[in-house]
Image (cartoon, rainbow, N blue to C red; front, top):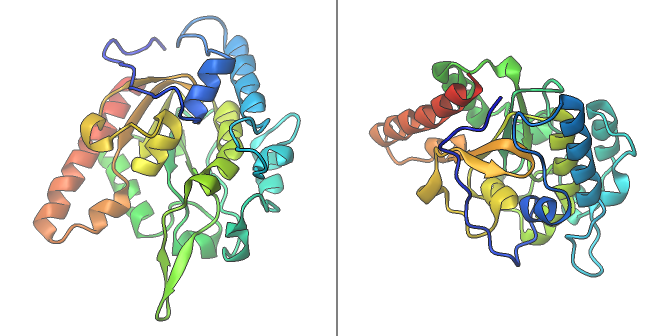
Length: 265
């Protein structure tokens, strides 16, 4: 599938150690449609291995790099991730919440981290935000069966508020620790397009200067997939103060996902 003519390169500062900059520095993926699928598979696998080497981590930091299987598959990655202790989040999370979906999925949907319900169920996007995502995908004409869903961070980070567990944003060290899992997932799934849901996912892939408010809904170039698109996280729609605001933002969200459907053809 050829690269969309409107694809543009997002600004990425040279000092930001993200999946995107690491891949660019080490192995440049061939343009979409260039070469054979086997050639692209080998390139993407090399990107994942080199990202998983942990060179993006700061001195003394632990990452999941050493847990990545030598010849990763989704089942072997999921099994290895179940025992991940690369950052302290495992101590409070119920379990690792790994990605879910078919290998060779056309679209990879990338969120920030699992929520309360995902943490308990062990599956991504099964709570209210996931249900809203399912509705939006259907409205945009995207078959959920063609999608792989995952998060940048695989454990639920939370703080207590009364009897409730409230989401707390993962920090840069926790994200760096988890990036090898994401690199390996992308290499195995080989999506035609990665959809970043929210700022944390977008900045992990595209750099800290990326702004969803500025570039949402645009098809962008990415070294780890032929195309990337960033939009809001469905949880942000649920947090809108009133029904009119929620409906307006949901309509924009569906428009962004419709651009993904058009890109997939």
